[in-house]
Image (cartoon, rainbow over all chains, first blue to last red; front, side, top):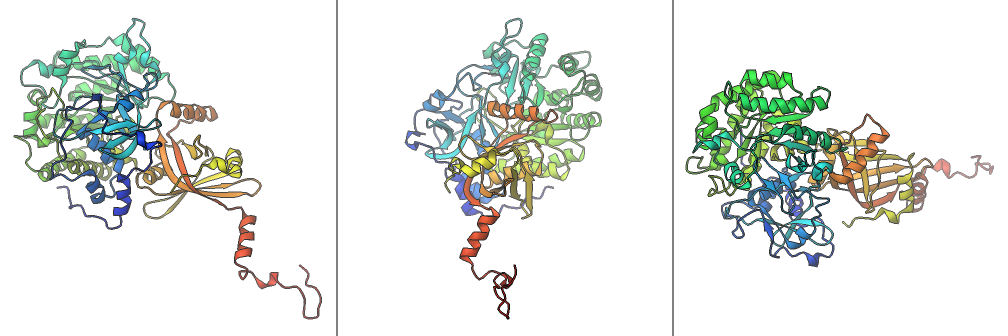
Length: 456
Length: 167
């Protein structure tokens, strides 16, 4: 079992960490800052509410965990609580510079709010998607005429910048499709969603309960599949930009069909990856695929027929009973133990350190079937993560963002402290078992607090 | 502490602009070990602080700079010019840029300087203190403020027979 000592307050750390709560940078002309200004665009339905009394605040936790970077803690909390933009912050968006549009695997964001944020330490904060009303007050992004700030009430917590758009974004393919609709961007990564739906949602009760794909896909009226020739055209154009991209990432919903289950999903990825590999002279290139857990034979084809370098199959939650409840489609098609077996088999193909699995961290606390205590949930998750590490598979976590449109939209998020301890635990395991974080590091994915910690 | 605008220091500006100036970045590890790195790309930023290109993403220097930013630790930069002038600048990492147009500008310069190079990050440092470390200036300062700290042979003027001591 993972040893989880109760955190102790460091007597020498309090003044330093207290300083992190105060504005490090005084906004010029600070009188223009007005976090109470009514927001015009919000990614959360929660406009009221405070932290439950039983949960420790950001300020308290910075004192309890002085070795945990404040910026990473803030990132986690922003993802738990959501963010709203003031009128001034929205007026500070320049669509010619900043990313405002993005195509995800089930909807296209086309309003003029920023896609996401980046802080002064290079840490990204993902803010897209609509959070359900969890009762937690959202953070605010405000602008003072010079800088953008992340605020909690009247406290300025950090300077933030909006993600900048890549060169290719507003270009069009030879068939006239805007390239941003085919390949989306993160600060240092290209993202391709070849299949923009998930077959598990075609059968009642089989979709993952935290997922909003079905609800958003139906309303977005997107095509389920993307034209492959246009993807290649866009990838080529995107890669031309100097210093922009470090990795190409593919993911999408499950496609069950084929001669063997998942063969059609495999063929879709093989076709695209072969095409992209040709752009790099047939060589291996920095890349990641998150797919349904393929069999060994299927994984071998991915590795030997394409330039793909790393492989991920997200198990979502590290507990058999909860996997069966939360991810019924995955459970029925493959099963929890077989999912792990397939991950281990993929290590024999891609090599140790090049295979990992992702968690929607926190869903293990969903009720009524989830863990009743955060302590038990953490123990169980880290214990199971250790077993996966022993089999050559490392584990990353995302913050569970309780989204409108998911089955779990009425759930409550775990505490910030839970995420702090989980991130520390997963980072410790990665170090103990000597896995490089490169496959999923802060500048490629940027959505894992545990790999943010791997930077130092 | 308030950030200093280095544009107010013409000698420091000149030292930073001179490609022959030796520029050394000093950091401290979590266990208190010193860590020094020569950073020829150190320049003045538009806001009067410092900036430099970090070529190696996984370098110890890059990691320690991030640690300093995360935990509000200080860093130091030593400048030594070819004519013996020296400056010690102390401050804190202000920002690291890993993407966007600013990053791209630095990336293209790094690539044009050496096609084998990529770029990990662009670091910005806010300076809080500036100290001149030019040896001659420091020597004069010590002579004035600590007149007793001198070897006696340097003070001898006459031999016992009244002859002047040759120096």
